[in-house]
Image (cartoon, rainbow over the protein chains, first blue to last red):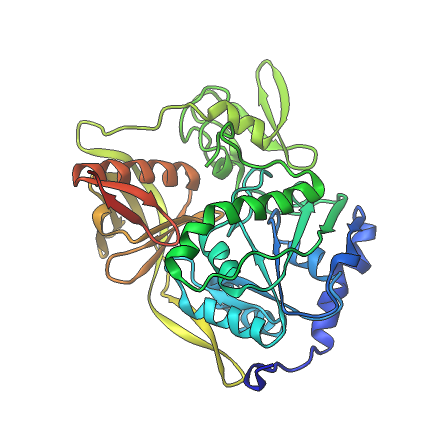
Length: 223
Length: 201
């Protein structure tokens, strides 16, 4: 474990936010979790999930008994209060308008230090509840890191708070964690790029099959 | 974030950008609201129809996008609020560099026009005029209610549409960019995180 990447232990703020969904959502529609036994006892691993709602981080992280480090869009760190809160939740930023090597470096450093990193593979919330293919950058990260991958699916969160509405509603939510799997670790950039399509299919299938999520296909009309 | 952002064309009369403020179609008068869960209810004079967003989107999938008009414009003028970021600030966790964050300036309100070769933005008082050539764009990303553009001079612009659909603009801009690339002998490969093209052989 790299000593320079040792991160302060979580405080009261982290554990309060961590428990919110588990404590409160039973009053707002219920939350069902499957496959908790698939969550490793410790990192390093990559948790890869779909993204239906802004509430997904609460619904997912509440089941992981130690801090997990989510990749979040950089604009969420812009405000002083929200930005400070994001850092206390162990988030780290990625700039979406460019290839962001610092985000990759931070992710790899945290994995090498033994932590778990969470990435929403689609890169954004779904507009219509249908899961899109993973972003190539996420797949390249998975192929470069060579750590176990824990697939995770969220369902029902889109009905609770779709991207196009301003307010959440009550509703049941399901979260499922799948059996960890590995992708080959590929150091050569060209070979890694060649491996992206097959790895993308595998990741998407592993996530979608957990809760039978609808996925984008050739017949899906939206981009 | 609004229903008009997801339904970039009215699924009843099939007019692109038909749904405006108040979630009502400016063309056929249909009103839209959120129904059960994430379903969308369309209310017309003939009655109500409730469907998941994905089904409404299927209905508009083959709606033709607006093409160039006689004056060379494709879309707009449209009321927008634009904020730009020309620098990034480092973000630290303890002493360790965590990453970089865009520093946005104060937003300005104005009108945006998409032409075949560029996006033109100007404020109402004319104090700000910007032309962003399509050939110079480095990235396009639709957020929930804003279109985020990576500009040629390393700036980032976040364009919030006050009365129109962000996804309509993203689609039409993408097609305009594709056409612009072809005119320059290039094929558009990727939009995110950066625009990638290849030479047409």
